[in-house]
Image 1: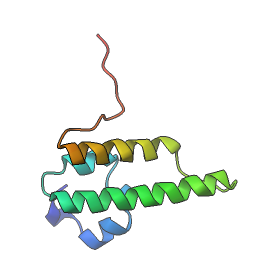
Image 2 (image 1 turned 135 degrees about the horizontal axis):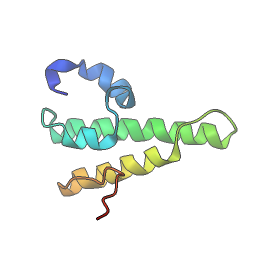
Image 3 (image 1 turned 180 degrees about the vertical axis):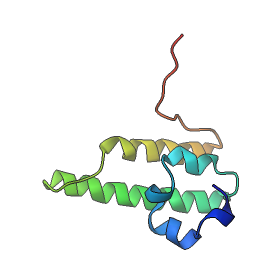
Length: 90
């Protein structure tokens, strides 16, 4: 995804709708570091809200997404790729 393929304001409102995984934000070459961080922060805020809703017995999001977001934020801070969740054996 490049900067010309989306409306940044719309993506900031709902990053999970525009990116399949938090790692996709980290890997997006067209986005600067500050924008990536904003997107991950917003996605984390949304994921936390869904986790709270699920704890209260409402339909919520998957808990693993919050962990993926945290990994992506740490990777962005360290300048390294975050784990995608997939493992390699062999």
